Image (cartoon, rainbow, N blue to C red; front, top):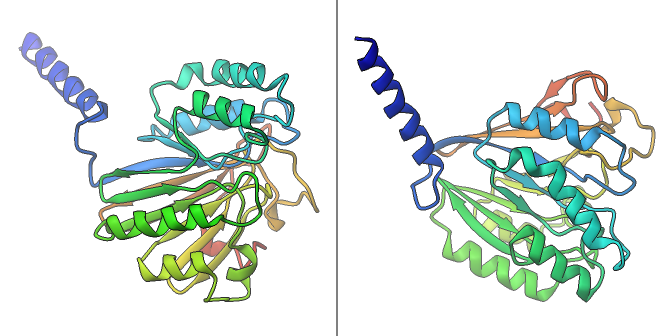
Length: 279
């Protein structure tokens, strides 16, 4: 009987592993983690704690909004990427999708390094179960270029049947148009037209939230980049991670502040935060 149960457990473990292998269909129910900026002016030890707590959630993958290195210096950039690789070494079992930030790309040389260490293009998309993810590049401009918007529109059209859609970029270029309900702004029009549920960014190191026309616009909390402004939690200034659970066409988002020593472990949802933050 013991042999039987040992064999059964081995089969279960094997099946669980196969779910993670590339080429196997992703489940309709899964969870993933969104990370904010590691830099600029990274607070020592915070990013490492973010990853420890993110890994404890056992996500299907991790998605970062960018600013992974301090950057801005071609001479030191590769060494900084190698240091990030060292930090991430214990977590290789989690696929990582990076968006390019302004601290990641500022020159042709830094663009090549981003492609090398992220193993992705500057903009790209992928499906996981019922969800479609579009990663855009606004690393060198406060606005989305015509090329980015063309990519986005074609990609949304090609994946219109996916029931859940996320648009991700580093800068929240949509922030002012969404705050003032400028429905003529190109990205807002596309998000509304194609039924995008979430538009995600970082860059400002502050939790900011806007709901408009059925779309949730979210600039996520810092994952290590220094806190600005009042530095008060209730104003959206804190370190943490964002845990997203997808169940078919239903999406649940938890904003999880870091536990001590870099936070108090408070958990909220986007709707707990008023327009443009403020708990």
